Image (cartoon, rainbow over all chains, first blue to last red):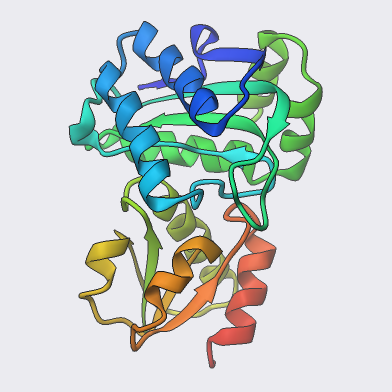
Length: 145
Length: 89
């Protein structure tokens, strides 16, 4: 399981469209050999097919696909966009935080999801995501959960 | 009582929803069987309630189960309010 490790986090990346944002967050997982490149395509296809339902809280998107779309290890990356973009979510747009989920069929999947819930269920943590300027600051937030 | 938490793929989003729905139900001392599942499988399952996002709710309107919309999946207070408004106790 790889959860928001240093190489899986990128702050203030530019993206003009939801597809670019999803691909940027997916690329972090590909570069660390946690998912296959085709999984990134599957995340984009899921967005195009099912819409922005994975924008699951204000500002927060969690794109993902299925384990069989090419996940090697349960994992989560994080991209904070330089500027927020519209995903088409009626209630939760615009999106600034993208957490790409490498959805695994292993038991680690549940652990990864619990870590995401622990991090994002606290509004004060989401506030800190806006302001943090280094990986160390993110690490402090994660460490407290 | 059976509750389905539904998302597009049944992998990530619906699992988060299930975790927080279970927490909300626990706090309210409501016993329920909560499952997370993808949209297409959900249409062929029977349940008392379906909890999902605004975007997917439209596709589930023909289901016999009552559909409950949650906007912020991390907001247990919103989920509790939705339960109060929709689930008879």
